[in-house]
Image (cartoon, protein in one colour):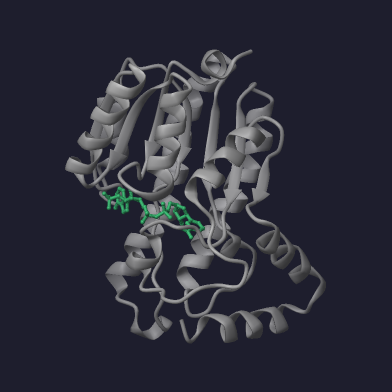
Length: 259
Ligand SMILES: NC(=O)c1ccc[n+]([C@@H]2O[C@H](COP(=O)([O-])OP(=O)(O)OC[C@H]3O[C@@H](n4cnc5c(N)ncnc54)[C@H](OP(=O)(O)O)[C@@H]3O)[C@@H](O)[C@H]2O)c1
């Protein structure tokens, strides 16, 4: 079955106004899917929608929305009523680098809402009709940070651990309904993420392009349930399982605390 037949006619991307989300949108438009684009910055969404409509002849629906709001899931349900959404890119997220005791309570709450609560509730909303149709797919953005403690990005790493486990579990549950779920764990990728998180400097292993992460995602969707992007990141996440957790936490703290 072709991509469009299996995952069309509509795809929905959260966090489509920048970075990985915008790259997923471009790749999906190229493959002929109509797109629902979700994020807070409306102008960015409109600009992207116009570009994709004129380059690929697809239809788009922009939904400017703060996914940390109590009403966000209901709003999304209402605005997408009647659309057959066959591919969900569960992507919007942010991180913040600061000692835990310096983090604002409101920021912790927002991060958990956007990175954990929204992905879980939106998965339920969008996977249920796919399961009924016995076809569809979801890509969940976790992170290489999901595999180890990440002081002083403690809350972020923990939220990505949630996404990793949620996505891998759903991959098993949804398999019986004919729906593919893939968890994607990128390392350092060239997006706006680092500016938002207040992270500076380069990393060992280099910086990936969002296009490469997206290309691998679509190559592996339906074949694997989870992958770590980049050889260096894969090695790091794999090797940590052979060391005591206290050593891994200490090394991770050394690497992150001066960034
Ligand atoms: N870049 C990396 O190195 C990296 C590595 C591992 C994992 N990831 C994961 O990849 C995903 C995408 O991140 P990215 O790198 O593409 O970052 P990005 O360039 O900062 O994009 C984040 C997207 O999320 C949206 N967003 C943020 N807060 C939102 C809110 N409250 N409601 C709705 N949308 C919101 C942003 O749009 P608005 O601001 O317009 O709302 C933007 O479209 C995240 O889940 C991140 O954890 C990234």
